Image 1 (tube, rainbow, N blue to C red):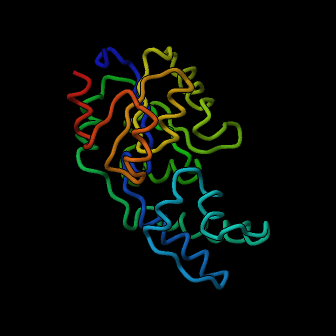
Image 2 (image 1 turned 180 degrees about the vertical axis):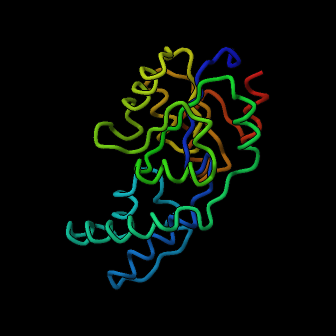
Length: 215
């Protein structure tokens, strides 16, 4: 039963927070610094989910390594100063996290740790999580199950006791590879038609639905 799950693992971008515009603005700033034209929000949104380096590389399109490193520096510097200019919580996030206050909760994102922690702090979300794991040198990115196993070990929870919730293919794939239950959300950044073929265990269309799902 889902109500017996003792640990909830949440993705960040596209699951808890709509970060699309701030990410796109930072990428376009980097592109413009290199003399390149900006890309539409819809295009850049499709590049999100595999970490900052991949996001910028996709925006550049087969870049030379020097261009990529330069663009990454521009992106990181700008994004650090504009993390929450336009980012907002999805409907129901605060109430639902509060509803699960007695369960262990972890945040697992492919967003660099240097951005993940301050973004959560700025949006007053840090207090909800026992562990916050962003992209960092000692851990692989989703869809590798390594960071999921790391969280399970940190919190002393067996795979059978955990549920991962996310809007991306990487969330479903990482959860399945780690042997934990998966819940896809369809309101986020990644399109539902990319998620459903992966056969997540559960699907919700609004964050608040998680409460009913776990009753």
